[in-house]
Image (cartoon, rainbow over all chains, first blue to last red; front, side, top):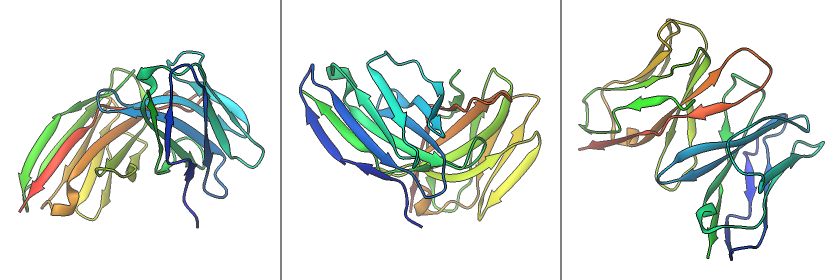
Length: 112
Length: 112
């Protein structure tokens, strides 16, 4: 079974731009969660989608948004990038709540 | 509410034991444990759903005290491969929303 795939692996953007990250979950997994990982803040929850519906959202500004498609693939978008948005963005899929998360290798975003 | 992990870091000699603790001020539905090696994605270790339940994975086991909202991860006879950062993730409540919140992590280094 293929694992969680995130694209692209690396991104360099400048302040003010916007970016879209993509995540393909494991086949059959309908839940997709997104996390931001930084050295100082650890793994911060962004949002979770299940069957195209956002079920929960973390404490991030409205510049961070996401969506999920009917095939469970998910995208997250960050608009008006700030230097502080530089981080590793991890996507994880699972069957549902209280089930293991399977993480992708992440997209490393650098904002200059 | 982010769970609190302790200790923040621990250094072991190969063959020694370690305990990593995770506590929350909220009533928990599940506790997850993950290990992340440098430059890699977090990998699922185990999940605990009920108070007092203990699960094992080779020489790694965990317990969950539902009344105290605490979980502990036990690493027995540590191996070099155990080095990495361990995260606990907690899921609150029994409603339909799914939100796994991670602690700040415990860095474990096993030396020969």
